[in-house]
Amino acid sequence: MTIKNKKCKGRKRKEIIKCHKCKSQADCCKLGAWIDLEEAKKILTLGLKGDFFHLEEDDAFPSGYKVGTSYEDEPCSFLDSDGLCSVHKVDYAFKPVTCKEFPFEDGKLSSFAKVLCTPYKARINNRKRIKK
Image (cartoon, rainbow, N blue to C red):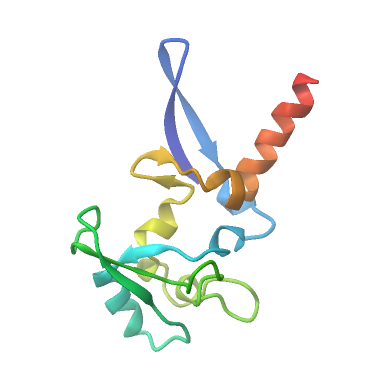
């Protein structure tokens, strides 16, 4: 479960995304993720099938570098044949922080949440139906 504070009429309200209730657990992995280079090095020690792409400098990441888990707009290369995260299956402790925190980035709801987060999309659709 991921929680974010959201202002509501002058006070904060908690917004909750219930990832564990998601029926399609890997929707958020459809475009891969940017992860810290040091996390990538640890994942490599697991010997899993998957690759990293596009090493770039980025001060927002602890090591100062980020790598992608997919090529261009492809799914994450660490999704297994069941469509689930092979890193998560082996050891949740190795799962990258950006993956654990999604649909939030830097404490704010990601712009990709509307596209990739099934529970968030469902909640938006429910709100639209209620307003009609």
